[in-house]
Length: 586
Image 1: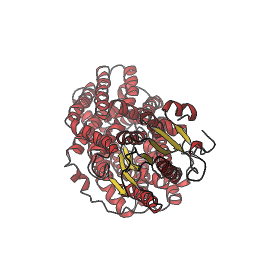
Image 2 (image 1 turned 60 degrees about the vertical axis):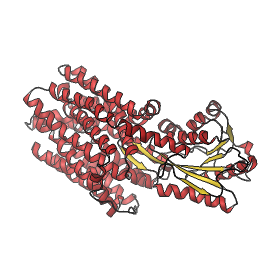
Image 3 (image 1 turned 135 degrees about the vertical axis):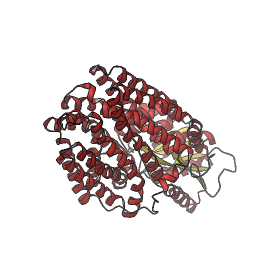
């Protein structure tokens, strides 16, 4: 980097409010695998059949499914912070009550209450972290992804450790940890504003009239059926104690987290969402078939379950991304619709699996789970055209060919140079170098007698099975309009574009490159990255992909540089991705 390069900003330098919610996220994600190590112990000590114990998943997930219909309605009326607090309080109470119960029926009932609290929590936690973060949007996402990974991986380990003392231990442990998170949230998280518009309770159901969203939701039902069959019944044939079961599902959780965050985006970029999902669902079906055929071999089941974590991580991320791509409704509504349908599949699967195991044998539920994974491929294929068209529309937005809100063109002054020169493109974001980048780009455009085009990417981040807007589309449009107004006040004519990205952060770089190539730009100006190597690993580096895919010179402007502050030759200027990577490590 040159002397103007900014100091690397760490995504982990965040206010206490963010850490409070992140801690609560870790504990919440622990719940995914927390009870798995104690399932056999519950069955033995409470004299319950595996099918009765499986109701712990059924009650929890079915209530979560129904609650997804009201979470946005509640949040839009009392605000995200209060919704978060209510959800945490419900989890504290019902997790503790589950630990005090002496019957499997009591635990099942209290797990239902736990599901209500969890729905309220997961619907708002990511949004609250993003709103409270001082390390930028990218830093907030990285922190949330870290919490997700730690929670999924540590949950089974904690469940096995506490379960080795008593089956009540995991329930009491969650209650205590969530109480700490509740106190921290109340005292440290600032009040969050209510959404500008209230969400109707029927909006998520009405959204299912859209074929693309319905197909993706039905695909998720089938996928979750197989997933929760594995999660709810695989512990029994392993014949392990609580501690060893905890270690097995910790290995599973580590692969879920790693493949969800670091591998899924790369597969999506290379093969596309649909093709990756087809292959991934097929491989899930193969792994589940192996479990079904070799249920009598504990070692085979253990290895298969751990391997399954990789495919589950990929599927979680790409299915959510596909939903956000095809859904023609606001993100919160799409998330609620999708969550409602998919959790129904997850809730019913353990119950049906138990009945099948009771009436036939333990092989049958796993064969059915394998069949649902394969059937999901055919359901997804019925929406193949919808998904690919939606992805292509997002790509076409980069050339200004798509209609609003995917690629609206906001115009101030002239939109082209009278002399026909190729334009200078500048990428505008909320970073510290935004003003400097625009100023430098305007200078270069004047020197080259070229038209100036402003681009801003409206990003929807996909994190595991959740999604969050970096900003509303109206805010994205206003950001571009404000930059255009400022340029117009200085006598600089320019045009502006808002592009939409629902893939990983690096996809923003690809969209900018595609637009620049489409309009024949002679220069693209961007701000220097302000995050470190961890962020580069997770977001695919928008800067790197812009340089690699654009066909023109890319000017990387550090914060503080701009008009009157150093000549253009002092700035980072590269004509090839190889030179950029070798000199600056992007």
